Image (cartoon, rainbow, N blue to C red; front, side, top):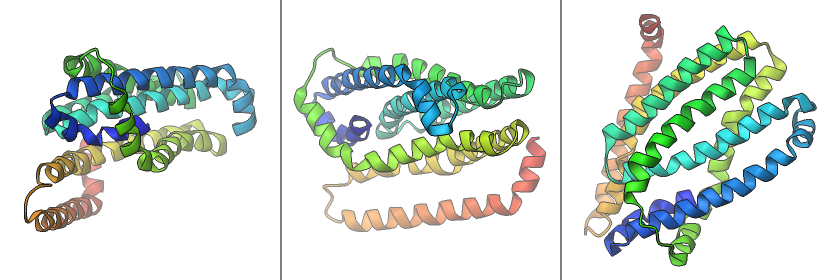
Length: 262
């Protein structure tokens, strides 16, 4: 995760003309680290399930959850590449594909197969796994040169470390809420929550990510301008007002919108 957020130095490496070496250095260590981490957790999944939720029967769900966390974190890299290269349509397309696959498989596993929390987690894992496989072949591999740079790795670690706590907290809490709801409520309520969660993801994808994704590249592209502070101030002001009005508009008319969609 430190390495992923360390890709904020994308523009520095691009200017130096060694961006492809940078990508390979980051990806190779990401995959190696996550394989070691996930393998060690799976070996003690029953003990962890007993400690966290009080039942060894939840070990399978715990393994799926850990798989989701790993794949979701890896999925950040291709999204960041699209963001830095200002490819808004591709960014939207990948997230929309992930949302559609996860939504369809959630309905199938939870409603048709009555798998409950296991079906919900499996659907999410399938959705993000399919999309990241496509993204690796379409986005990452064409941008890699098979050469390793220790300096690139250390730079990414240094830049990415401050983001670890917030990103880890968001990822963990976005997964564990299903466990809590399944434990405290019924599978029917879990299904309703899952549907609402997909709607929320759709809102975030359309109203927040597709507009905000251009903000960071614009910061980097204007960092050497004389009057860059004024540009950043206006950019943030307009972005905040636009997002605020879009969200307020949806909150006022969400009932009619959802009724029309469903």
